[in-house]
Length: 285
Image (tube, rainbow, N blue to C red; front, side, top):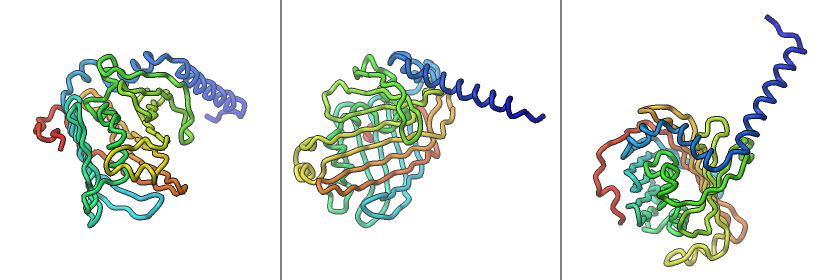
């Protein structure tokens, strides 16, 4: 049956009004409401509390988007048990081998992955701004230590920012301030319809924010850093709804104004909950 143009217009207006009401409602939610809806979207309390460890294995593609060129395929492994984690992005080249971040729940280590035993610029950033590793933010809900699972225990300050347009999409933003003081700005974004965690943006630009050892020279070379995580293609297994596609993008701008952007695109091939993990996997080196 064909609809008249008038009826089609009414239908379109209804859809537009309904969509607007969803966004408007999300825009007015308190931080506590957003958190509750996010946890519900992740899974039931029983399902969430039943997972003590998780191992994710997948394919990874490393790309230089700006400040160079090229792409190479590799692998991804992310193991977590409570607040402990081992995050590995692996490629095999003559000069660069990927990234590895380990957190034992208190301290972190960042692998020196250039062939000359130095850290990449991403690694330097992680060393200087290790709070996002200590707070188990990296990897989002893939991590069993995801801080939004235990806000009271982890102690971050959360501030609802309302609806924000990011990359052309309307998302619900929450500012995340770790218990430990940091100059890193962290904004966690949720889909306003499903309340799934779909993005986190970390940014810092004050000069002198990178300190110590081999980072002293980096302080003079670089002035602005941004790290973005994007999550999509959600599937439900074991009562939990988790993403299967993960995009990690790191950008830096030098004092001269030059920009370098690298990207890791990950597709999870297997997600295994409550797997026995060798404690040595979480030893800080």
